[in-house]
Image 1 (tube, rainbow, N blue to C red):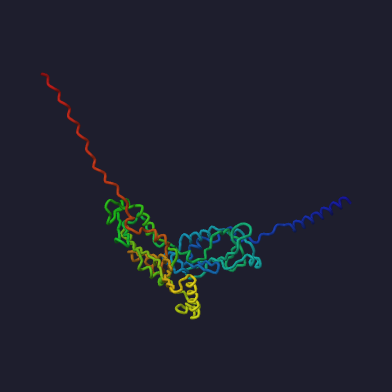
Image 2 (image 1 turned 180 degrees about the horizontal axis):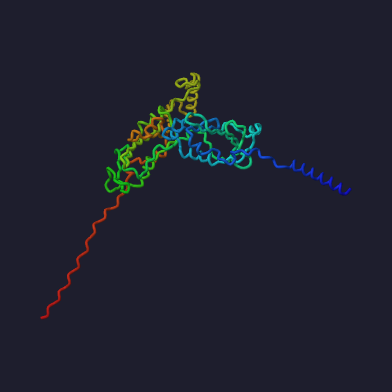
Length: 405
């Protein structure tokens, strides 16, 4: 009996152990998906792409690679793209890894908030060769839920890049970038006294100016600051070429000319509509119109006149009519307009010439207001000339010895 009882106990324990294992067994992996551990996108796929579309928050950015290999922002007046920004996005995509398959369940996929945040790469024909939709970030940990195309699979990727949906931010803000060491001369305009031209034969030579005031020399630090402003220009915004503010700058431009050692010339015209002061129009009357009606009705005028007479009587001067108060016009100040820049290269095939035909480019006010306003700002006192060296005095001849008598 004891042996039979032992056997039964062993069998029961074996069955119970199996049940416990079955209940507590670890969940099976969703899938041994071949994508796990791979980059979110392979670099060869990126290199073959001719179009990139980024969508988020109801906005869409479109970039396209031109025949010369340069990327342009087709969704923002076809301006050249900011290559560093594009490279940063590509780096974030290729460095991100697919960490795990989260779910293949449609209901769970819907809870991961896959909406309109999407990146797609297309070929030269416009066909998508790769597309991914981004969901929310996980509640624990980092990364981003992603979904390829319309697949019923959601993955977690170690992606942390910034998806900027503003097309203007993808355009290269650089308009002109001429290194100061490459500039041989610069013509600087002034409202009074005409232009001043500073030049040098070699980059290591000191600047000379035509004309130079007596007793002064060119202030090298002032020229370096000017070249940093005029030779390195970035836009802050763009306007339509027909904008009235653009036309208003034409009569208020300062035109600088930069000439490089390799004989290229860049003409840089900067201008803005100046501040204006205008007389304010008459205040409208109660009926919304200016003119006599604004003074009130006849009865109102009569009451006003009676009140003025009563006031005069109380002051003891009833016979003397009140002197009319002189009308002092009120002025309103219209602030200065934005600063616009136009750059022209002597090289007819330079890309900057074509760029100027697309938009009018605004630059920071500081770039314009920080420029020298008077020619005297370009100079500083020259050191006094070094006097010629005085030759050493000749030693006195030694006395002759006296003869003995």
